[in-house]
Length: 108
Image 1 (cartoon, helix red, strand yellow):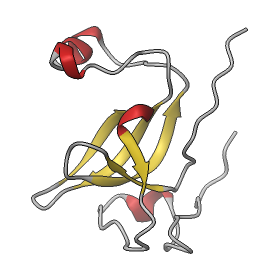
Image 2 (cartoon, helix red, strand yellow; image 1 turned 45 degrees about the horizontal axis):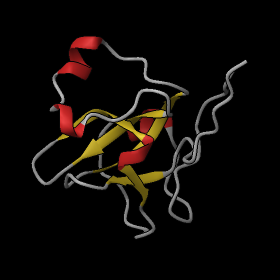
Image 3 (cartoon, one colour; image 1 turned 90 degrees about the vertical axis):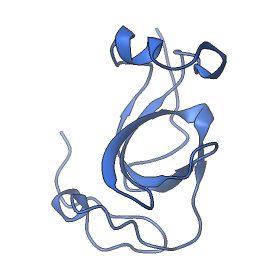
């Protein structure tokens, strides 16, 4: 049986190690679970390993808001305390508390 432990939790604010964006975790895949086309589009020298958690983020940069899919190896926790302004955050989370967003719905 495969067991993986996610380093980051739902509602946590994280930032990308290499690219200038940050976001809020709203889902976690224990292993890579996107398309091969998506994976192959990443330059080979920058491709993350597949056998690690991958995070779905409500992401933002200086120009836009979007959903990002990022490997654990490419994320770091964001302890700035600054809110993420993604417009979909209120659909899933309450107001930021101590640098994290509390869930606003019941998980199964």
